[in-house]
Image 1 (tube, rainbow, N blue to C red):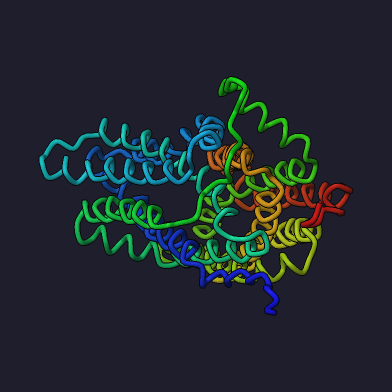
Image 2 (cartoon, rainbow, N blue to C red):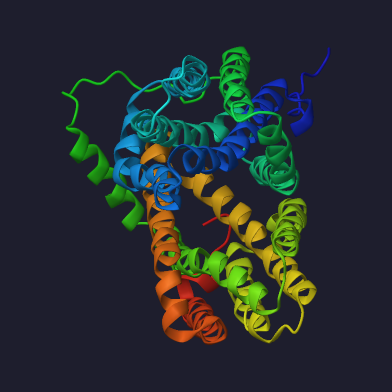
Length: 411
């Protein structure tokens, strides 16, 4: 008599649903990178105003901060797969109106502003649904590898994306927008081809549905009652504040060293390569070391590395610092996201994910907006030391927190 044994799950890369999800995401992300460079260039060409270019780029972040919590609650109510497909179709259709309007000679700034806001809403919905769906595509044990693969592919696009975007814009102002419109539709097609459900089956509700505000409150309450996720989210927000300020700071430090624009770009390419290495290392380290130790180690490495930005005597040493500092963050992010996604009930994932993303994105936005004034007030080297002190305080807080020290992936 044959003894039936359970079939082991297929390896991550042999799962067609994961390959489809990742492939569609990468095509769409490449299109976004092309448009991210082309949109401010197009705005300046239309208006001659760098201020309006900054407004167009900032609108999506503002929409995310305003709409993020609502989006999380909505994707917990709606079918995630259907939501993602229609978001991609919507973004593709909106983006396609730019080259159509340009060809007709009627392209103007009100259209670009409206598209930025509408795409921001759809992108926020898509992001909340996408993050919540991944644990239903792969197993819990495969989450670190899946998140590491997503991070590695995304960072690879960061490395090559700027060059590809420049070439695309050189071919024609509307080429990046046309490519992005097609990429959204390609992403929708790959999502449609995925067989797995993007959420667990929900029991039929017998009580009347809650108001949206009550749904959001329920998600925030659940998050607040989880000390590990809550504490690490607050620390992550503190780190994001520094990260937001760091972008302009590194540019100013490089200019003090007489780096030309190409060399400044190479510094950020070095950071992207470091992040790529971290993403590749993340799955193995996440399985080997407890979440709390990885969190504490990341903050201390950042705190100890950051002052070297201020004393680096050449732009290529800035590159070395950027590379070294960027390795640790993806490792921590994979560990934290794997833990959070695995312990959060499926019906709450949209709300919890959007709440944390809103917190960290808001902190990064504040850092970005404040960085110019702080550099003017203190000077770039002094601000670097101030931010290094801030990172040291975060590292001390994590080290002294029993919640963080004892956090493991099985909590």
